[in-house]
Amino acid sequence: MSVRNGMLAAMNREQFWILIEEAREQVLDTGDDASIAGRASELLVCRSSQEIAAAQQILWDLMADSYQHPLWAAAYILNGGCSDDGLDYFRGWLIAQGRMVFERVVAHLDALAELPDVRAAAAEGIDFECEEMLSIAWNAHQTATGQELPADGLTIRYPDPDPAENFDFDDHQEMARRLPALTALYLY
Image (tube, rainbow, N blue to C red; front, side):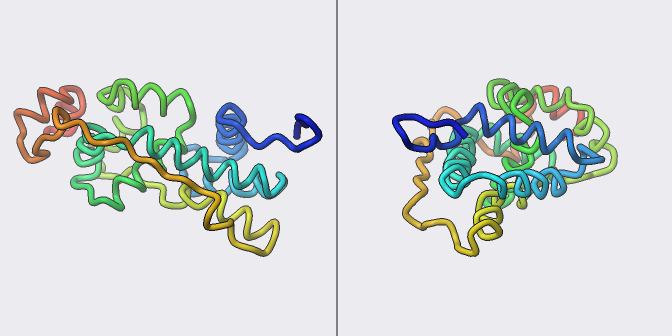
């Protein structure tokens, strides 16, 4: 914990990503996303309640950053369909992959097709979801303090949708045009 002006500084994005990487390093199977989320929550328990609350905000800021119609299309391809909740769980999975993968995929969605787990899962029909990641801070705060996170301590601001990104996920030609590597991999 660092101190600024006599107050504990809250966790920042860099520290959040370090926490996720530590969790990934400490699990036996980095393909077990629920274990990564569980370990991240365990690591958060050791932090102050202020840092845990900050981690919750950072998590939902990342969820907002990745709230894109084309990412939803990618999840639709990978998971054989994708509901609203499914998109949240997919983004939880994406966060569990760590900063490098998250940032690369959000910047270039078709990069998903280059991930070894995605390539391996194409033939097996494995879904990419990690609902557990969405509650790591909530679980940590509950364990550390015996109380729920304050309801007024979180702000979620999803970006306004870009009309140019709105397209039909069942339009195979449009999906192939926008996500050629993924559609080729999944023979969509």
